[in-house]
Image 1 (cartoon, helix red, strand yellow):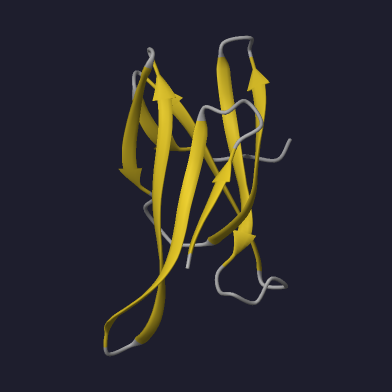
Image 2: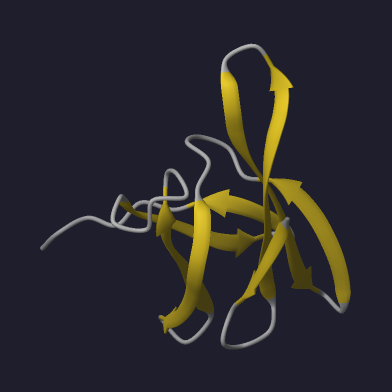
Length: 100
């Protein structure tokens, strides 16, 4: 089963599926699609994969959008993860959120 979650602004989406390709069990795989400069690009999501449940977007400094991916590290929805990304110079970049 393949899931697709899309951001509120429609410019970022994540496909999620489970793979049984190795001897370590079921692994979650992700591919992101993002739109910039009128074109759509595909990218792997690096780091810990997640089952994406929701993508929200927040604009900061009037020209930068941060995408917050909410999901879980397994099919167990109670195992919560949040990852953040931005689109910078046409590339998808993992973002860090620091507390004040």
